[in-house]
Image (cartoon, rainbow, N blue to C red):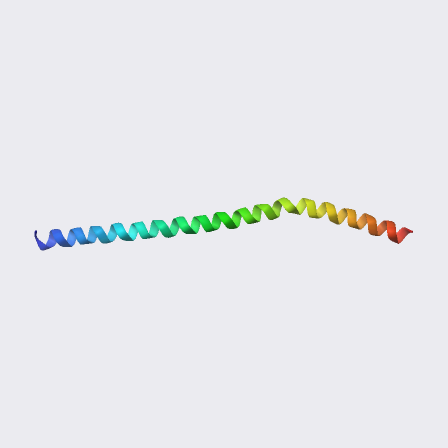
Length: 67
């Protein structure tokens, strides 16, 4: 086997390994971002509930102040 073929095969192997490693890192980072977005979405769902509770508390305070 000539040196140039060997160098070419080693370069191909290195390229494949580097691409595979980059793909794994990209997949991991996307999964982490999806988890963060999911947490944010759950928080956004709670905001209307919190706003409603604040309205109830404000009405109760007004009732107490008017007594």
